[in-house]
Image 1 (cartoon, rainbow over the protein chains, first blue to last red):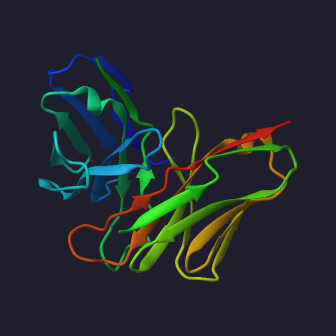
Image 2: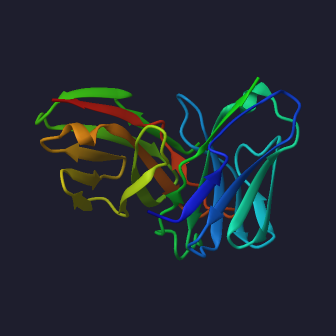
Length: 117
Length: 113
């Protein structure tokens, strides 16, 4: 199994509170990603990182921010949680994801189930 | 618009009853197609990558095939431990910005003894 740890695994919080999810990897991979998974939808990319302090937006980035201060850690923050952000959040990593190395598969953590009441 | 559709949404099989899952895609160009398996409460687990039409990959009872419009995941003589959700994802031709991996919604497979 890829060395990816997500914390917490479950969280219940209230609307309007800030929430931070953590992804920790032991593979020293350059690329890290945050996805959300909702019933009836495929995994959707929120943000990704291509190096320390290098991040960019995915397709559903509104209401989310990220930070990566070390290779091994990638944080996802919901500044003011809303009920529409209730979801399962997955972190993924890959060795590379450039035009030349696109065959590198992404490997996923076991997710954080977040409920916002 | 790039799109991935998986069918059926759910499939129930008896142990030993072979079948196929479908992943159809619409993209401007395909650089890779990925299959994943996801167990309840777990993250997706990588199975295969396919790159070009006609390519096939096998792993135990699973065989993935690829055409220009779709991919199939064939399951031969399935066992109850093959029960899971199977996800398909495509990587379109690079178009600037980030390499966007597009996932289908998955097929939930249940194999009964």
